[in-house]
Image (cartoon, rainbow, N blue to C red; front, side, top):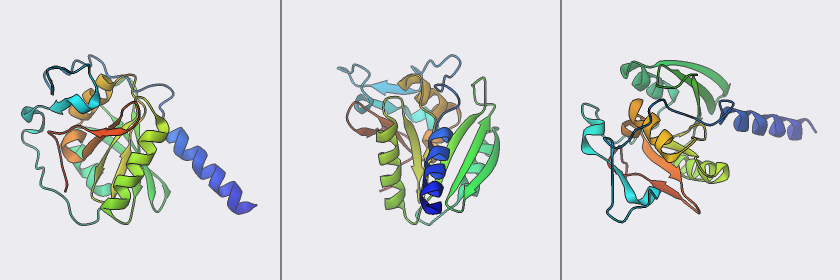
Length: 188
């Protein structure tokens, strides 16, 4: 019974961490200078690409070793963002990001997995489970799930403002699948 209660509490914490009490909304979320859309695009995530200037000055060399939340914290601080950590478990931390164009701090759920493959699967599954507006980034063995955004533009605007699109592979929910928006950080 204690194990079941632990699983229920862990699941509730994970779901609570994915929301800031509402949808992620970025002030002035105009992304026209940050993305290119294909000619026939209706705004579908598969038809969008980050412009080359979005990641100027950011080292996007792929990460092939295992990392922990300190890599994310270091990156956020180099971007001039406030970041604090709350450890839930050895493999799960919450990073609260401030000073990022939102009225309140934004809570990121950071899962520390055993491999890049596991992190990719974890992020894909979490984004699909949370549905429309859900997004996150993955770098090496870290899967970072962000709060559900009010719109695709809000998710992209936050990822551009924080440069998370340049730190990890940006993944967003579509109607029936997840989409990686190219032009930012990539790993093979």
